[in-house]
Image 1 (cartoon, helix red, strand yellow):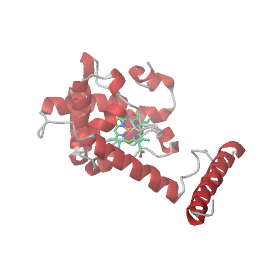
Image 2 (cartoon, rainbow, N blue to C red; image 1 turned 120 degrees about the horizontal axis):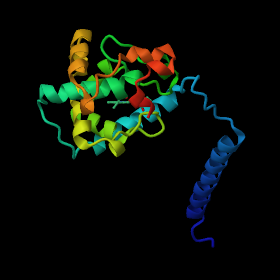
Image 3 (cartoon, protein in one colour; image 1 turned 135 degrees about the horizontal axis):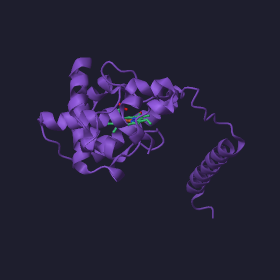
Image 4 (cartoon, rainbow, N blue to C red; image 1 turned 135 degrees about the vertical axis):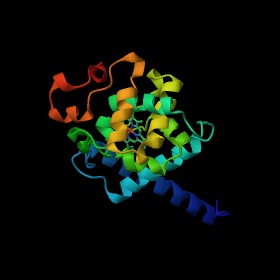
Length: 202
Ligand code: HEC
């Protein structure tokens, strides 16, 4: 018993620290001390943790994906139509603000006209396909074919260089599944069900 008092002391310290950590964790969970309101901003520490975890996670998982270096104009146009339909109300588009309600999300969906420059095409493909847990970024992989995700990716990669006129021309020509081009995304701000793209309500 007296042989390793130092080792026993260290072990006791580790176990004690773990017990205190578990007690703090359960106290925060059960007392409601943590404010989950999306109307408040994350603290800097929480924001840094979530953002860094997300960026490192995406970078390490996107390695096996291959996107064409120079996607065709047709692929980009198809992606534009899909983007107007499924993404622009959260992420905005050239000449079109995101819907007002999306500014109440935490994290706030970034304007992809700028944020897309921070990601490789392979990373964008991974994000669109898999989504980002606990952020409101949906996974489109479960109900979109790989070539539809590739079209969205090609468009998002091209997005930072596009003007409002380019975007209008692309969305007019990119008509997913032969439907009419998606309505202007600004309609999402008008608060009327009748003006929402019906496919987004399905
Ligand atoms: C309901 C809102 C919503 C919709 C719809 C949505 N996203 Fe997102 N998206 C988010 C949020 C929120 C984030 C930020 C995630 C984070 O920072 O952890 C995000 C992040 C991203 C990112 C990473 C950008 C960055 O710097 O954080 C990409 C790329 C992206 N989305 C692409 C798309 C595409 C393409 C579509 C449509 C197919 C789409 N998103 C639809 C909410 C949305």
